[in-house]
Length: 420
Image (cartoon, rainbow, N blue to C red; front, side):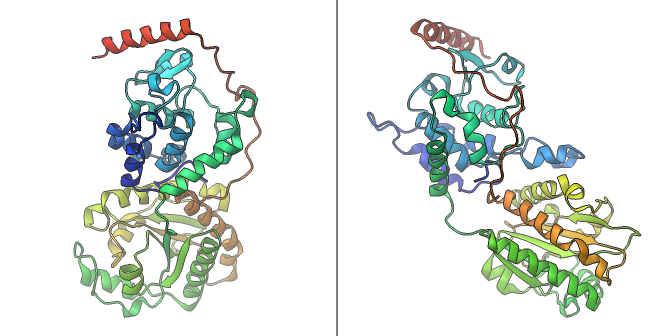
């Protein structure tokens, strides 16, 4: 199960779990329950603005968030959602041990008997994310993206923990909070039968007559149609095999798929041959034109960032930034696509489209796009953890005594009094 990516549960399910009785003696809810909205924001908001995410920052954007259902699994297992143990005093999401590096963070983190403590649970959740991502001056989880990989380092067996039970507990809770349905992804084979498109059902925010004229003119040749049709079918089959309800459709914008079936995401697959060398480009709908709501627009940006982050390295096809984004925004009406669905137009191709040369790398590209979508949906297949590097192993748990706890509590109270 992937730690990162979009929420696999609703906010309502997340907040409801915090409000349940977690203390077996008092029946009290989690003390973090009043902060549910702020907690959700800290776990789900990206830390990098898509408008400035260029170069290496693409990768930072793609893994900036933690799935709230998975994060809640950690919080529940560590402290009964804040109702037992040291979390009662620290407001820590994952009982993170204190390190001097945390003094440089832009939010208050103090040392409470060797453990990091916070004024609010939402700040504890923020540090939980920053600690996983190595943004707090530590780097214990570099390259680890799944619960199966993270937990053995988070709670090592050498410290008396049971990583297998921990993993099972986190994943069990995350699944219990999930929507309970398979995500739906439509794979659109662009340039197929566009000649028959009409203005019916098109987005009212753009010039429909002009858009239809462009779409009718874009109907491809037999070779182009064969490529995108084959690509969409292969990618749909790959996603189905990995647990996604995927459909490969053509470019007729049928209401049955978009309106009745209501996909969670759409990848419109195209080719291009306007350059002397292979390259790839990606475009997403403009929220300002009424295609998507804010959340869907953000999801589109994050998936685009995820794909572009390692596309050239994995497929060998260079990426090109061009006016295609603007052009495709105008050309691609996105018609019936639900406003809540993320959507991308992938331009993949070769100057010599009508030759078999284009098919040489299709399997690699299909596999790569499948993996990006699965990671985005928190359905990534767990891989082997990377080799442990020197300095990656967290130090042993500090020795806690009555005196150290009393001293730490006094220090915490003093710092809280000094907060503005």
